[in-house]
Length: 137
Image (cartoon, rainbow, N blue to C red; front, side, top):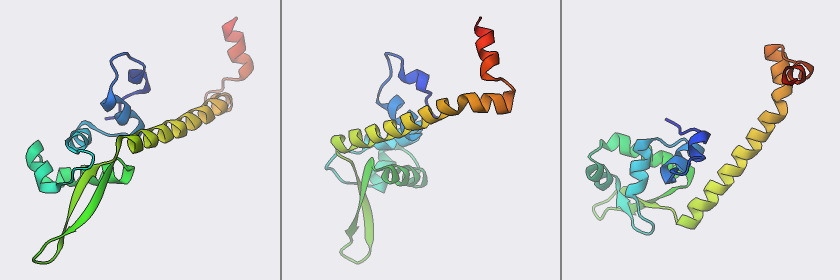
């Protein structure tokens, strides 16, 4: 469930709205994200228990957050052999930088769409630039 750009324009928009819109993060992923702390490592089972969610849904959310760079994953060794992973929220400066980069990408994409609007309206809807100008009069 992606928050619309219009929601971001409201005075009540917050962190969830921004991350949801620019990264397509849903409420469940955001819950997992908010469970993380910068510099504090937490394992999958602890997050799942804390949120009362299945390990599978938490794992999927963590994988997505890691792929976005918002959460870090680190392997830890078990004394008896094997490994497990722990997770930590990225530093707020890193999160802000990633968000700014994503906003810039979206801005470029939106500008490109606006630039192509005349051509696509004419091709797909039969609306020419001349007809649009006539409609304004």
